[in-house]
Length: 384
Image 1 (cartoon, rainbow, N blue to C red):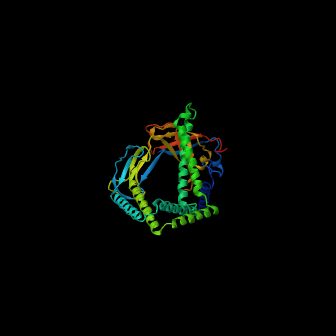
Image 2 (cartoon, helix red, strand yellow):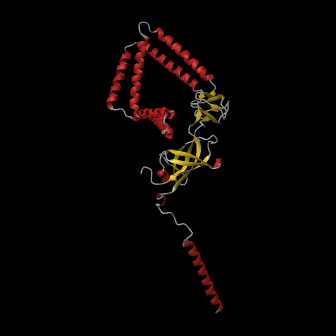
């Protein structure tokens, strides 16, 4: 009897324990947060947007050589302030100089051979006919290749560059637009010039992507045939000599360009922040030699602006920038641009890159300092 009673009590204890555990796992207490509703993030009326970012120069560039070679000199040092056009690095030019000398000798020989064949025939006439034919062929090939991927890519890059220049110039102009002398200020001139460059880049991009119509192709083919007929009227031997001179001149120009590109010059006035190679190193084409930055003007690059915040941020919107490394100093700024294309994190979260222009540049700002940026409270989505 006692054994039976003990078994019943043990069974009851087990049942109570299981029930308690089940209640803990399957019942959410009032202190535990419930899962976010599907539309919760879209209802942020009245909330304040915050984002993190880093300080970056408004203009900086990693410089490299077009062609590879042995680095002969590197007069620039880290921290040097340089001016636009100043030579910062040079490759060894012995072979390049030899190539140029050989090309010039070849040109001299071709010109002498042509002069011996020219009695009674004008060299200028042959040259004009040859040039006219080559130009007509090049124009026809260009029409057939439209739109060229290479030309389109270059035109698109120039257009993006022009758009960014207009945004920067517009931001600078807006900061002083209420000044009584705004028409005479350099900000107005820079905005005017940037707008002209943007219009030119837009036109060039439109030309790059335009396809040739049948009428244009037919007209170009007729031009090639006419140019060929004029060229065939000259003796074949003379035309061959003229072509030889043209080829030799091209080789001279190519050798001169290679020699010129063996020197790396500063594209703008700034500070050398990093050296990536040393004299004597072999430097490949496109390999970074040094980094040049204009440290007189910094901006903030936001790195974690989520999709809901990006939908409410507006260009020229005022923000406050906090710099923890400078005792949490606050700076005033405004949104200059928000990227059209998002960045996906490793977890699939969507973020947008945004640029904040600072109203005032302070001397102790440094490239790479982290920042916290706060925006005015959300009152509606951008575009509403």
